[in-house]
Image 1 (cartoon, rainbow, N blue to C red):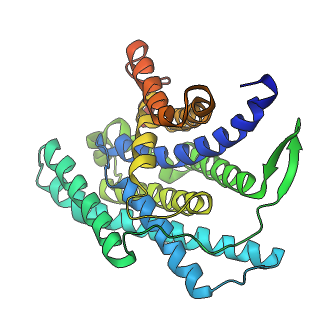
Image 2 (cartoon, rainbow, N blue to C red):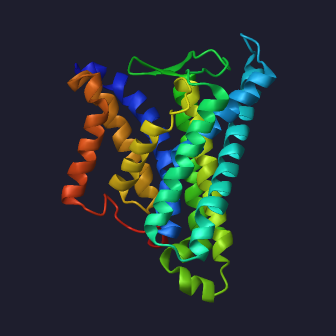
Length: 307
């Protein structure tokens, strides 16, 4: 790879890393308040993508929409996918987590419940939408927006990065500057004491799932604009995003952002250097290396202490 080709891989890597970061935040939020990994979060991502597909297919956009129509279609896709992801995550918390919490079930039961919910949603999507890949309708022409030292930045790349950055900045503000965020951090730091101080723990946990699901659903839609949809589409992005959360410091929001960006860039550069078959290997090699020298991740803090 020549030095003048670096930006050709850096820009797609930033785009991919932004998607991983948004998904990783969902894992981090749930771990922060429950100290558990929501392994069904990858299917929340998939539900968001397919919900946008249903809505946009029903709207039936023209093959060459105007700029205003394209903006409205993208806004509709973001709203539908985010709402569907939030609703799915809320249902998962109600069905797969809350009954076990009220019975003080062992942690293994939560893990099995989440994996069961994941397989249920995955196979339900395969039954409803078929096993073949699907593509979202064309919402806009993916033209060049501007160039950076000769490397073109397209509308899709700019849309994905801007949407991801806005969500991450908004979440960081919510967690560190709002009343709900104070409740989330209090439950993450010490749930029992937070309950004694008047924090409604069940409500905080439900809202945390909703926020993570909303972001995961939108990530699914943005991913669908980039690649095709399938009922197993959440698996590899979900696993990689989980690795990103661990690299950054699982339970730390800013760490999840950092880890997602790092793995996305590593994946992008590994293809021309080592070959496409080594793309995911290199990302998980970074995970192993980070944990060897920093077992708690790069930032290595819990959500309750990350303000």
